[in-house]
Image (cartoon, rainbow, N blue to C red; front, side, top):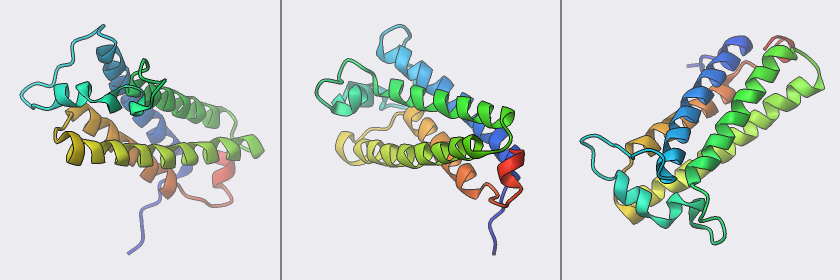
Length: 159
C-alpha cells in the first residue's frame, strides 16, 4: 500500500491553513497564560493542572519561566505560515527549497517537543489540557503533510 502524497501546491496550502489553526490555539493559550483571557476547558478537567505545572512556562527551564510555553508554539506556527506564504510567491530556486527544508526541520522538532509535553501530561502531571492536545494534533498533521509532500523534480518549482 502506498501513501497518498499531496501535490506540492495543495500540501503548501494545507500547511498554511494548519499553521493558522495552530497559531490561533497557541495565541489563545499564550493570552490565557498571561491572564488576558480566561482559560476555559468546558467540561473536561485538567487544563488548570497542566497550566499550573512549571512546563507551561518556558518549558520549565530556569530563566525562561516568564515566557508561556505556548508563545514558543505561536512563534513556530507564525514562521511556518510565513514560509508557506513565501513558498507560494517564490515558486522555484534554492530559496524555495530552503524554505521547504526549514519547514520540515521545524515540524520535526515541534513533534519532538509535543511528544515530550504530552509525556508530561500523561505521566507526570496526570492531567490533560484539550487545547494542548489539539495543538499537538495540528503539529502532527503539519509534520505528516510536509513529509508526504510529493518530492518530484516538478515539486521544487510549483508549490
